[in-house]
Length: 218
Image (cartoon, rainbow, N blue to C red; front, top):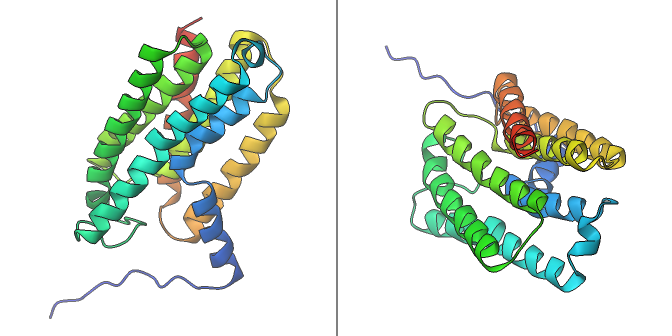
């Protein structure tokens, strides 16, 4: 007689609602735009060498490439029946979207680098986002890893690398990002979207990817 194993039912309530809200608010597709906003709000020379009009243009290009196109692709995959939900709980469902997202990230990076002369730190931040999504795609081929944790880990590493390179105090921003990372970790575990090792591994992978890129460029 075949024994069918069922996934443990998630107990819903305020904790579930909070975890779901956090997962949507700090979705990895928002992280590149959020990271760009944080960099532009640090007390560094970047705020002076990039005029406000160009900053707005960067926000638009990055947001379109890293959120709008991937989100529309997810909706298309959902309508075609390639994924069962936007949460994409299985690694198999995530692979196509990760591949498309990597392509969008690379195209956005190419457009910015080829058309605009940007400070090295902005280029590294965007290049790191490309590296992170490619690593997420590769790891996901063999193991389900937390993209949420990778995203916030990458932002943490980018901030530390940015601080070390320019000798800028980013302590307030780091405290904010650490708090967000804690909330994200809680939400992914509360929703049973990942096991602890997938969350910790994701955070470390994202962190070292961005941090090492910044340090390699010094």
